[in-house]
Length: 294
Image (cartoon, rainbow, N blue to C red; front, side, top):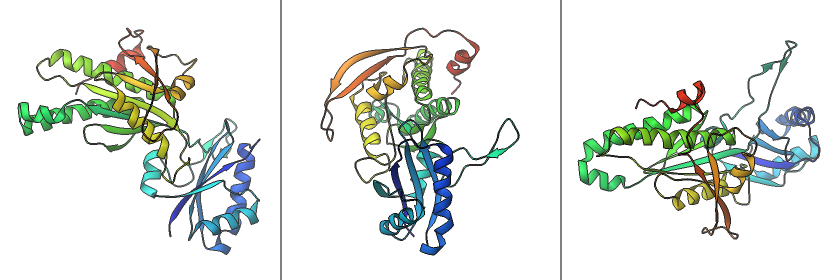
């Protein structure tokens, strides 16, 4: 059967109330020949996202109506592999043990930060040094980015031609990852001045079900547009990234570079530059992040 994701706004919702509603769905799912696979809950804006294996949208609405009366505002068709790539799971999480020894399920938020990277002039690089040498250099490029993703708990999603797309559950971690990537390439270029690698990075954040029918559709589109707007060695982020990083202990500053108009977006988007060249505070943590051996 097709896989769907729906979105509910449940004002005043709590973890316990959402879990109770999910249990009511499970109790009658066999009656309607569908399966509620899992859900995500964001207490900040009371958003609940259900993942359902169902014959069609109508039966999803019918079950929700009968079980607890919370009808979704939106339902989209999704690919299970994409759900797992962006959100990290397609089933209920493993129970966590509380301080009292009780087993309890913790359902994370579906809010994600999306990162795009783009390598400058990879085609010209192949012409300059040959395909074999260029492939070897691209493998080093990939290794640098994957190491930064691993250290900062980023989830690799896919290659995008000359770069990568990744997702993060934590916005500050995505910014730290971008900083680490640029500093690692700066270090690499310092020892390889004849064949430097220059990367652009764009960041945006949002929820999986928005105004269109694609998983993280508008969030991904804007992250890609922001990356394309970058100069080589630049990191640009949308306004939501800047707002959510206030109060975080980052070792780089943000610079307001004004607004930009992007195709597909009605309003101008506020952008900020991450000044990653700001000297980091040297701590054991930052030293380990910045040490790269491709």
